[in-house]
Each structure stands twice: as C-alpha cells, then as structure tokens.
Image 1: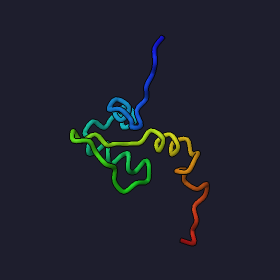
Image 2: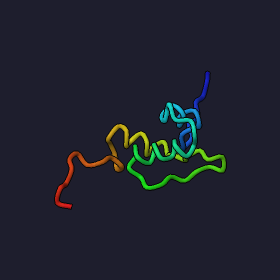
Image 3: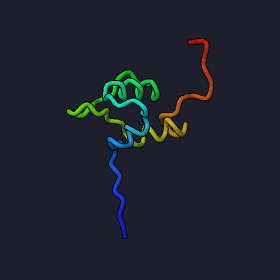
Image 4: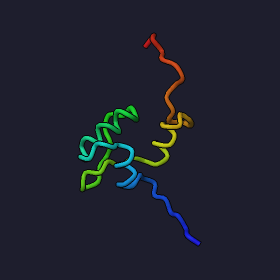
Length: 76
C-alpha cells in the first residue's frame, strides 16, 4: 500500500508542468503571478516560486475564498 503525502506547496515538477514551456524560475514566477492575479510570490533559495496548493486549486477551479468574482464591476 502506497501512502501519498502532499505538501502544502506545489513541487518543482508541478510548477514546471503548470508553466510549460517556461523553464526559467523568474519567468515561471511572472507567469504564475499573472495566472493567479498576484503582485508577487515568495521564492525558495533556488528561485522556485512558492505556490500554495489550496490557492492554486481554488483559483483554477474558481471555487472557494480565493475565487475571482463571476463578473467584472465597471464602477470601480
């Protein structure tokens, strides 16, 4: 029986898969910031952007607390 333990953050291979074909860590960080609507992401010492698993799942699935609103509010 295999036990799968998932980290609170995406692994390097998951970040690489999400950001393909980008391979440079800075470019991946920019891509993820644009994808998630964030200004900046913290990084590991090797440059890998730290992305919370819950944040990315909720943003990409458009559910939960981090989901963007359904429509655009032009009055802002």
